[in-house]
Picture 1 (cartoon, rainbow, N blue to C red):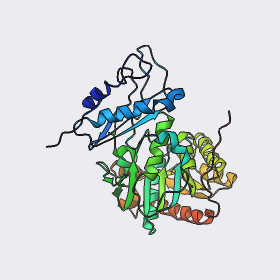
Picture 2 (picture 1 turned 30 degrees about the horizontal axis):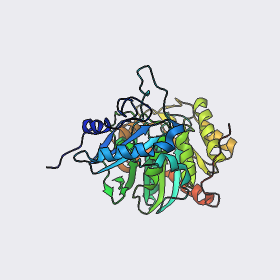
Picture 3 (picture 1 turned 90 degrees about the vertical axis):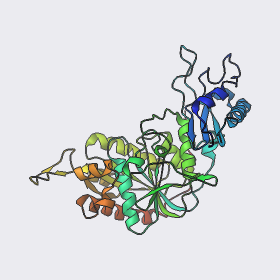
Picture 4 (picture 1 turned 30 degrees about the vertical axis):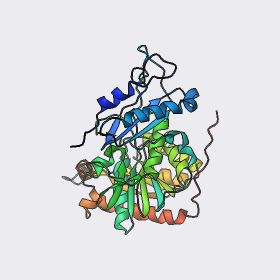
Length: 383
């Protein structure tokens, strides 16, 4: 029976590699990220001083060669991450980054310099929000399923590296298989899916800085065998940071859908997300009001728990389409927690109908905006 490589053996191999400029080895100095092992393939990063990144390529190769000798290791991918926290009192870096199962040598360094679309994918739609907790991932997965019902070939990419939701929302377990030099996406309800959550345990925190996030996103886009898709729905993390800029740089996004709840606090952040996409020349397909009115299943009384109509008013004020309202229903939460999205498993429910209406309007907005879609922009951050 073939030997299975372990983290302990990998660390033992790396203890033989001395970190240049330090008395201790790579492991003793705390420069090695969390090690990820996936069926004989080993992935990790080495945190280095940004000023010395270019001269430490030999160190990366030495680490790769040492780990390749570990019994059971089939391949090794090591990246130099030129972004490191200051050393603490024990001489080790704080919160070392975790290696990406998608990371290959140099990916973090060249991620921003690979323009163009994803082969076989006709349209890429980002589903975004300015803040967390507005149900964006639930909207993304049901939007993808509703688009699939319209006869489209659909995939969904979980771009939330820190809090991936797709494995739970789609009820998927296991790990994606290697196909030649790419990973094969998982599939549920006829939709192809990829998520960092397929490669790490659900309770494992992803302690990464920007370069690792950029690298992982770039490779989940372009190093996955998506095949021919009409639409790739990207479930974005909340906010307007590295992930959003990476997506805008890496591919010509066909459009963005902004998700918000009705209350003013959420709409303030949704406005920021919308304006970010406008600044990077991505057409905004419209706004979705999630967790809209609640209708009591017992007495039929309507309650606007988070307010009502705020997203519609904001869409009108900003001059973008209003895609629709998703009611606040226990069934949506229950089916999401069970990995049985409401569009696929309760197709006649009011919630499923709401998502279908949103998908129809989003598809129409996508057709109208095709003339607006532009190549991925060059983003300049002014100091």
